Length: 281
Image (cartoon, rainbow, N blue to C red; front, side, top):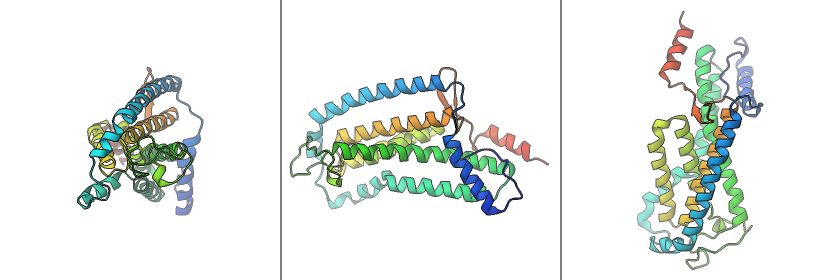
């Protein structure tokens, strides 16, 4: 969300809320202005192509050599003792993750509309980071849904046999929506996005993503190649959204070599000191 504070302080709350919401959307589509965005774009292209090439090769290897073996080793679908795994896997469900992030965004807008000055700026800076998290997951999941429909890969044992090559393109049902895994997309997009903003959380977030990935295998919801494809798509999608934000000077800065780094957030000690100084009498 926008970090500016030039919304008229005497305006009523509805007008303030409308202005905050409008600027939150407008900042996302404004013309990119960062002078180093070309270097960042080249770096994004290189990394995306490298990840995609390595990931595609790994997916093919898994599909040919490992998918069938792995699903035959898993417990039968619906095994009662897996109830805890079924609860755990929901933490990677895109509807739940996006609902939480969306509710947080609405909450930030509602509160920020009643604030002024430094407090509003700090809260809206956090709102911009929430926008990045939400869009990283939402756009990656959307791309995944399109691919699911086009590819039409059957889930494990759909059709009665352990056939990793059960494809019915454009079939459009849940039974043939195995590749890529939506939970893996969500978990890895979220893990990458959070780690991009707060690098100290990297180990925790990617541990969470790997756990979600494993639950999909244990529950026979996906083949190993499905979750690998989902993890790849989630990370590449979040990388693209990070570039979009950095090119508009939102939440990220771009170094001379094209590396994208997070800007200090509301939890930064330096930013808090500046805020306290700015609000001192």
